[in-house]
Image (cartoon, rainbow, N blue to C red; front, side, top):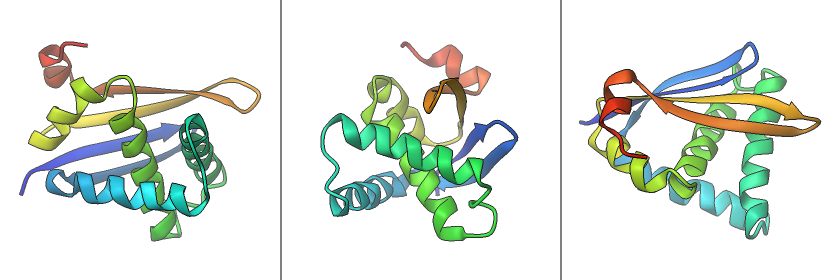
Length: 128
């Protein structure tokens, strides 16, 4: 089984998990269904996904609720897979053996920057 390490970091909160590369499509479909159930469309899907992650981590809700932690990972993976770096990043996630780090910083009131980076070896191999 191919795996990749996934880290999500916001202030003092973080999630560190290992993900199965062959489950990416399943996780993306799951998060899409959550967005569909809430009738989110267009760019609202990205902003609501980002807000969800930040709110859960900011309130430490991911520590004692496995479903919330899973949803945070699903939302963060969805943001990567549907964002501007998707074509460069997704093949590395699918092949496994990498570490992807999603660093979230506050850039204004309720405005956040999601910076995705990879381990040094993978970063050197990427052409963004």
